[in-house]
Length: 449
Ligand SMILES: Cc1cc2nc3c(=O)[nH]c(=O)nc-3n(C[C@H](O)[C@H](O)[C@H](O)COP(=O)(O)OP(=O)(O)OC[C@H]3O[C@@H](n4cnc5c(N)ncnc54)[C@H](O)[C@@H]3O)c2cc1C
Ligand SMILES: NC(=O)c1ccc[n+]([C@@H]2O[C@H](COP(=O)([O-])OP(=O)(O)OC[C@H]3O[C@@H](n4cnc5c(N)ncnc54)[C@H](OP(=O)(O)O)[C@@H]3O)[C@@H](O)[C@H]2O)c1
Image 1 (cartoon, rainbow, N blue to C red):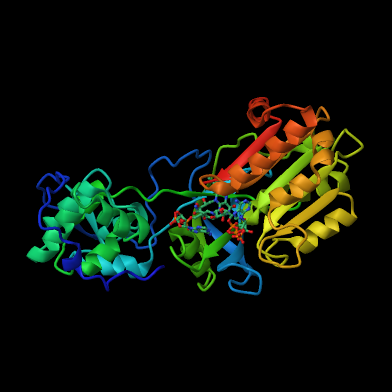
Image 2 (cartoon, rainbow, N blue to C red; image 1 turned 120 degrees about the vertical axis):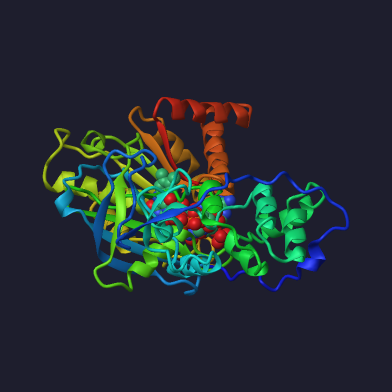
């Protein structure tokens, strides 16, 4: 995790005059505890998780592999890790393109810090009987802090204002009240949005601040499951699910789930709570075997396509499709370097076996790469891509980031390809065609927010 910014001098951020935001309230209540300790490995997962189509299982991690080491030549500051889950006992049915939800937990370090600050160490493991808000029945304070609350989410002004009321020190109180005011919006943007100070950082900056568990439980957002794409085919082994993820080793620091997953590799007999998510149309099934596809992937966005191609190879090997001739599969990948293209050796092997019929890479941090970004490669093959895409059963798949610039840049290139191929006057018309492709299932996206 990124280090807290405890070096800031709060006096520098208190304005002479400001009007604090109306603080969030919490009903006065007293938490009652049972005499029973709750087992610490019990992960409370009664609530319905987003897009769940199975129950939550505690699944053993069979293998954890470091595929790319952060900082290796030509890579950015990210490790890429593959985890294989043993799902043998669960009887799950899934296809490549499906996703699983992983239930994160906050780190022991963060939880211990909060328990200490809340003076809750002595009662941390006892079952709460009542009165600590809707989230809490049947578990302990430790479990609430570990499994249920998002401790690193962006703090709202009203929350900061309320935190001020829990400070013994007047200067710390003024700092938080000021941070919540309209007048200090630029300070809020600097500290909370840009520097990403979290609740934990704020508590370190304000040592006298002791919010009660009832307040945190009521007003912090829930810690939600994170989706991961399945990167293997059930035809090879239906008792295993693999996922691939990247762990950010530079600011703003690794995320909660990716940190948790990477630490698991150091444990004996590690396991993780997961569930199968509902399927959508971003998948490769036996029906797709005779059809053509163009796959476009950025970084770990290659993960689902590894499952697609493994599935295609296996359908061929086991003669599972009524269609004798397989369709053509083209893959365009953007990564920082050759080393960062996950499963590259396997991709080359699939190319030699004609499972993969075109494989073009762009390496953004390698001086000698032919293409910097994947859209440069797409533009180079513009004519071929257009002809291929226009075959009646060809489908275009894109797996990239949802919120940022990458998808926009790639769709810009795709629109140019369509504009040139269809001899359209305006890019907007080509964007409209891409939109229609999305509607009729010719263009499928898996975007990671
Ligand atoms: C349908 C779907 C499928 C997905 N499949 C995968 C997958 O197969 N593999 C995969 O790695 N992710 C996948 N994701 C993203 C994944 O769900 C998480 O969002 C991601 O792993 C970060 O989770 P976290 O809890 O570690 O980070 P959080 O604690 O949620 O923190 C997220 C914040 O930290 C930063 N951050 C954290 N990690 C990274 C990173 N590696 N690169 C850039 N910024 C980062 C970002 O700024 C982000 O705002 C998928 C998302 C969706 C919606
Ligand atoms: N929200 C999250 O929690 C989360 C989690 C995982 C990934 N992601 C996002 O998902 C994407 C892939 O992440 P990753 O870790 O798998 O890969 P990665 O190692 O970060 O690689 C991303 C690749 O895309 C390139 N790129 C940057 N801007 C681009 C653009 N405008 N058009 C095309 N390519 C561009 C990068 O080039 P440079 O060398 O120029 O950087 C790099 O080669 C990233 O955008 C990442 O931020 C988000």
